[in-house]
Picture 1 (cartoon, rainbow over the protein chains, first blue to last red):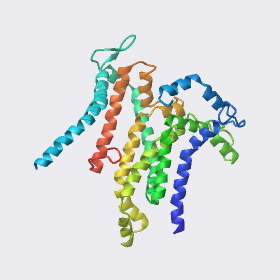
Picture 2 (picture 1 turned 60 degrees about the vertical axis):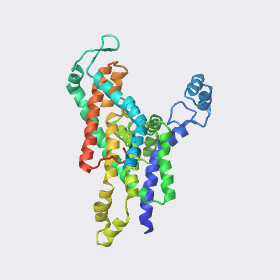
Picture 3 (picture 1 turned 90 degrees about the vertical axis):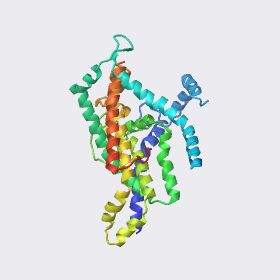
Picture 4 (picture 1 turned 135 degrees about the vertical axis):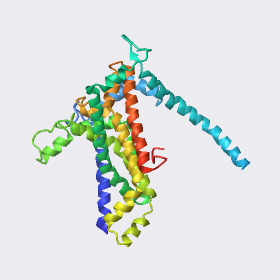
Length: 67
Length: 287
């Protein structure tokens, strides 16, 4: 009986994992130093620095009603 | 009797905004699109106000007919995979405890908070040569060279499945959730094997959900263009891509409108077929 409940849960887990892989990878590589995703060259927050320094983006956010 | 009449009168009044919105934002654009599809592109800018079938004649050209066939094929392949992945998911999900059902629902809805476009960029990281998938496969010595999966047909199919599977899951889940599981138990008690019980009871009772899931995946997958753009690298062209291109780069609004009209005709046909097959007045999950 235990096996019967485990297999469906395993399936749900695997599919959910696959669904989240691209999102997690996008988050992971946002901390990448290199400009090229998929080549890991060390942890860095430089893309976030560039992101928050972007004036156009700030304007866009304001226009979108976030700010 | 009088009271009932009064009640329905009041009800009609409350429905006015609904009708107004439908007419203004659904019916009017569709009429506009159909009218537009019979006009032609002006020499320099805009459209010429004449009645012509030139756009529809253009669609019959083999080049464009072929893209319709290709789009249909892709939609069919994607839908089959979405059923194979999504049906068991929705089915198993309905068997979870209430606490876990809620958690699962949240986990499925969560990705919708970001644009599908951005989520597809994640797949680019996975598929690109020397990307995550290549590194895993080469690390396990299954393949030796990068597979060059990005900008290929399978990549587009994966993207389609990824974007559309939540709709199938939710449709099947809503059907399986409502199902009376004691009927399955009864079938088993009466001597049916688990397999037969599934085929004769569960599958039949969840059929409305499954079919509405098919409509919900097949219809949009005919028109999705950004997946083929991002993961297919414009190598494979689908109807959605041509519509988008003629709207933006081609500046040929009437032709885009004509393509959309044909596409809408096919999708309406699909929903009509669905209603006929299931004998349902409502499309579960759709309406």
